[in-house]
Image (cartoon, rainbow over all chains, first blue to last red; front, side, top):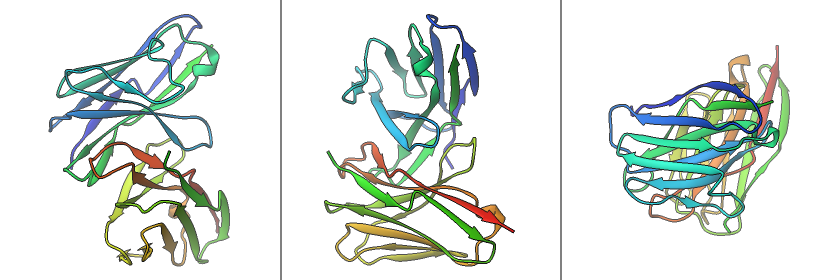
Length: 116
Length: 112
């Protein structure tokens, strides 16, 4: 099946610094990449949708200037958490899908971000 | 916006007992997907249901999609310790292959 490689898997950063998370589709072209955030013991919440070559679409309540998304190629999408704060500590995960009807979704391995 | 309600939030069973989690939506769904997430891991796709009244089986797992396409269930027969994890249902916002809206998940624990 399709593989999405996400890294880093874990990162600890100081408050005020920025962290970049990468998701690569290894054997297919990901026109669209979805970015989710999952707080402990909670469900996945959609943050934004990125399409190759265009600006990302952010969900209500998600700061686009804080969570910078770049989808410059069909195989790479990045999420940069800028000026991170402890409340940004969370599990971030990317997802893409294959098929016209979103038939099957493929997740990256996720990134556990801890801001200290 | 579209919401998918999932119950129960937690379920503990003895090994060998059955387990069921339910998802409901106030709107008709084009399809529904089920995922399993182990602690510390990422969601893994289990199955997609598309047709009204559809029933699919994967070994001890039985997935159902309601006749009105507004509800779905996942039933595990004779649970095993390997079934431990959080089970999420998810539905697409529309048919254009856009983002999935996830239920809150049901966390299953199994004691032997």
